[in-house]
Length: 360
Image (cartoon, rainbow, N blue to C red; front, top):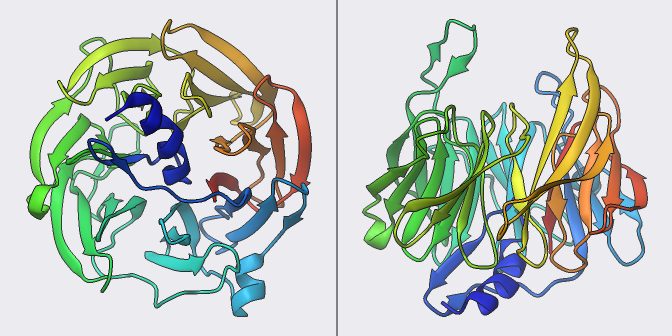
């Protein structure tokens, strides 16, 4: 594909959690932008306190609890992530209970019955052509010596977009998280590395597993730069750059990455990868949080913005503004809107556990 065209349109097509999907050599799904942001407030896992806020980038105004306002009920789950389809329906990925709520992005009204079949701790989703791809941890797990659990039967669930019927499930490894698509290849972040699957004809055969020799730990999230190269976060090390054609690692950059979440995204121009990291003290109290940028050409790392406790980062494809929040999992969070130069442009009170930003 033409690289400049890819990035300008892919950012628009993504509209969510750094899920960029290139479809064919010169074809990228395009979603017209309204300069609105769906703010996902994850909530506290045990309390079903998740909510959705709607932010207007033009007016700087935020509406909280728009799902409840539109539908008369709470979302009743923990919202892990989300994505926006080309028709501007938002797919909200929920745990406890496991479901995908599908809503109209502007009105927040439920568009159809929630998807539940084939979901076991779903993590991320992509809507492409007539398919929906969802990464799942699965329910089977091992207990590590540290006491942490690892989900060793993670899989991708494939659905028909029109009927929402489950087509198949395919195992991909352990702790599957972020996913992106390049051409006919689905890239999946797992503990084993970045799995690559051939999605042609729904065959979902594994093509490769990619990781740098010097990198330990799990891959967490994926994004693209302006050259259509895939970047993967490995919190033990930083980020790696992958050529999506040759499936080789072309660069490794040491940069702080949040260990629990590992989320990364790309700036508006596709020239910088953004990560975030919160430092905790021995009592597990947050001390300092920072957003970092990685230059995709030179690999140089810079600290862009600092606070106390961040749990996510997003970049508007319309304005280039950066979104994060001083997060709380017991009360409302305070969302921060930051300019590309790192200056604070505005704040807004959102919900419990503000974590993801879907742009449309």
